[in-house]
Length: 166
Image 1: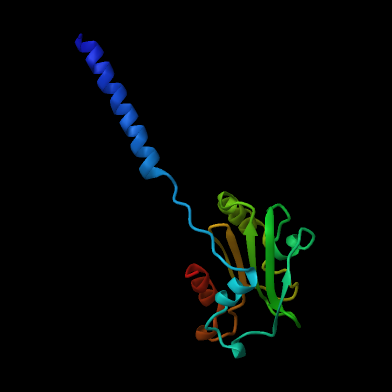
Image 2 (image 1 turned 60 degrees about the vertical axis):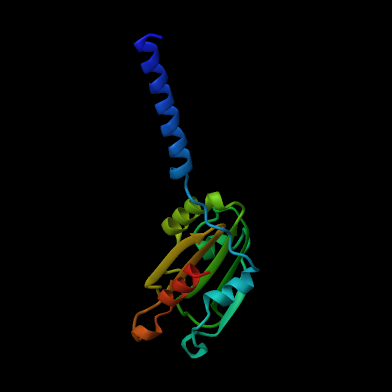
């Protein structure tokens, strides 16, 4: 065999080896989907928060017609969504859970919601904390106010930590 042929074979083997390593080790890790109904998951997101620190909350399903109000956009395709908001008054607090059609759409959904959501949707009040993140096929949007509230009663950090621990 000629040296040129040997070097060509070595180069091809090296390129294939690098490609295999890249596919195996650099493949994006996909998180497992969060199991349970959105109502069960919402209860876990609110776990550990005293009722006296919460406004009187109600839960409602979010559909294609109401998605723009709750998420800031109707351009996110989803299987189901649930919102938890105060039933009375202009209190800047909202937690929305969105189960996407496919977990691979999570990054795009998070980006679209972050860019579109309106923390002043209540008109006369504004949420000072806005968190949007995903876990598997589940996206959470947390909007909550921290103005004039003692640090130990800020809801967004606890809600976010509970979501992270699902």
